[in-house]
Amino acid sequence: MVCGRCSARGLMSKKVVTFEYEKETKNSVRYKEIPEEGTAPIVGSLYVQKWFAGDSKTIEITIDKKD
Image (cartoon, rainbow, N blue to C red; front, side, top):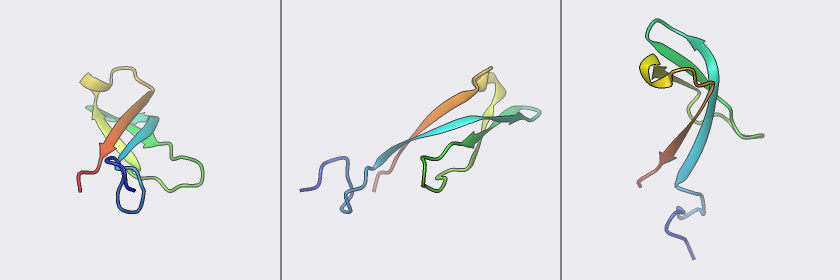
């Protein structure tokens, strides 16, 4: 049986990805993905506008695959 949140292979369709502060640019903050142990990064680097990032040293993004 496959649950509503799982694909046919039994993998979750939603994933929470954690990022930590890496550096600031003129108008944005670059965050580096912290992959789970033994796995490859899903996103890599993420740029967030300074007005939103503020002083956050860690952020989380939820990725929800729709198909």
